[in-house]
Image (tube, rainbow, N blue to C red; front, side):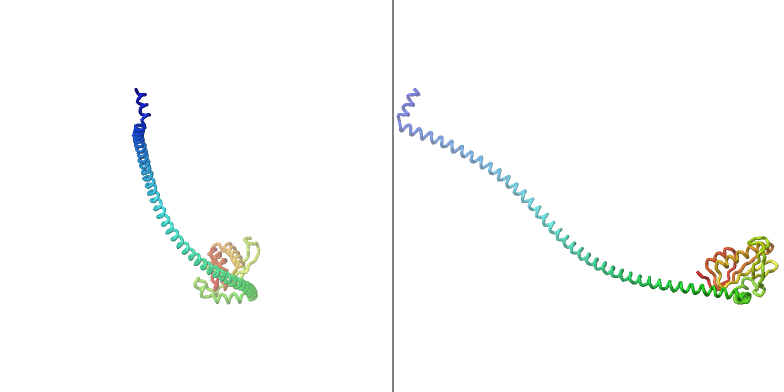
Length: 267
């Protein structure tokens, strides 16, 4: 039966054509629908992709905006740093000028110090010459004093009369005599010249010098030992009477209880 129907259709061109048109239309509709569905799916996928791309573009735009802000901020910072560098360069330039001025001042000062050093050196030479002259004069005066003997000592006692009287000393009673080392304090049997006078209670001993130096100190210590040994029952008061006395000698003699009467202290 089916074969017969098929033969009839095949042998009937009009039927076959009509049937073919029907099948074609159906197939065409199915293909169109399928294509349409595919197109819709593609459109949806494209929309999703466009949406994603839009979000990515928006995110990228935000990133670009942030970068733009960062670049602007960086440009401002660079500008400020440029201004700071320029200010620093000006400060360095000013500092360099100041350093140059200081260098010039130091150079000038060094030259002045050099000149002062030369002047001081010249002054030191002059002082040394003066010291030698003073020393020579001291020696000459000392020599003259030694030659003048009692007369010079008596003159100095008169010169310092008021100062001696303040210490309870009567310069008129001072005599020039000798003291012998009888017990060997210094050298047994040796005789030493001395200016002194004694009372019931005291023995006043005097060392009279133009310049009292270490030699005068040694002489006074010797006489102090001799008088303390000889006059054990009396109080001994020792005086140095001098025009000039060395500062160190003065201090040492004062520590020994010696009274100092002098016009000038030499440092």
